[in-house]
Length: 139
Ligand SMILES: [Zn+2]
Image 1 (cartoon, rainbow, N blue to C red):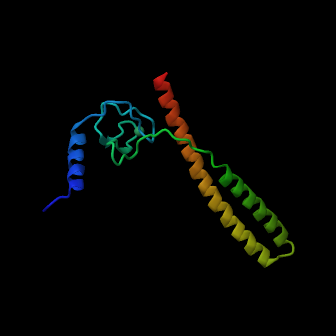
Image 2 (image 1 turned 90 degrees about the vertical axis):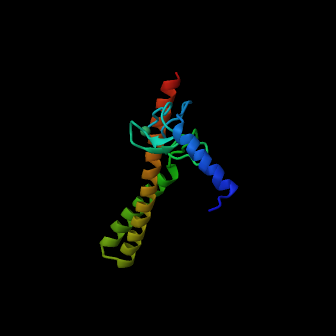
Image 3 (image 1 turned 30 degrees about the horizontal axis):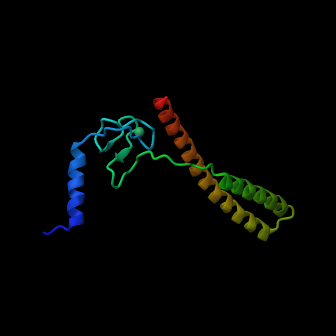
């Protein structure tokens, strides 16, 4: 079997980093734990997050970035719920089937935006937890 130059360098790098320990402050992307002195490819001792801190192909590692709150998704969900409520209210007395089907469509829209917003808020909270922890360690 002949390995390309690219594959060889990848193998070398893997071997190099499996034996080495992290010497700088690198933080777990899930909980913000400082991974210094731990192996480059391992799991966070605090939360169990599998990470790969090798310079190529990192995974589960905190990187400084902005996380915007999901305002659009939240407002979209609230708006779609309001339209759903109005359509249901207007479609029940007397019963107006097309209006109720339309309400169902808006309910699905509200669920779609609601799930997106929930995921977005979870990411915002997680990011805040991790950055607070890192800031506390620096100060
Ligand atoms: Zn962790």
